[in-house]
Image (cartoon, rainbow, N blue to C red; front, side):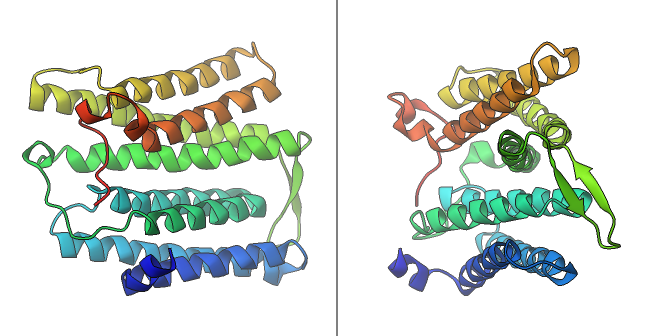
Length: 279
């Protein structure tokens, strides 16, 4: 991993270092109180997000195509979407713990990306050279980022079922209900999850004259969609308690991780059109 870090681009090095600094600032914020430590970690996380944006733009220009083809590129984009949603949630609800856990998650994603670093830039195959490639991938990764953060909120609900106080800039305190926060984030993520699923089916029809090919990743994408659909359904009808609903979200996030990372371990991986190339 140290060798990969040495040979990776300067933009990647800067991005990872800034995220690590932001993570350390969040950890320090657990021990230091005051408005300053409420702003510094968020500002550093935002700076790291800007660096990650620069990394993606640089890769896009270098490759001459959307930087979503290889495993390495997709991991960098996953870090970007998690950061985007986390910044929005922390800015809206002032939940510093969301920022802390998201920063930890993003650093883990980027460290994993080091092990998948591209040897060379890969050209897009003909099937991916369509306008639907960009909205399909972006929809799914926005969904993954939002639902990952929603899963963090669900974990926080299990730890703090009575919620915590949100410290605002002007000194007042609002009570944060992590179950309600999970619901708000998950609704947003489910919207993009649905869009990604529908765009994928439309793309399949245009490219292969088949809306659904029963590809393993397609099947797991549907399973993931059904899990979060069940969460939203039972949340609205009030059939299940909040603790059980939090576990449904966590299981859904686990399904997302398997859909994203686990396809290459399936016996049918060689027949899949959706398994990322490592280099």
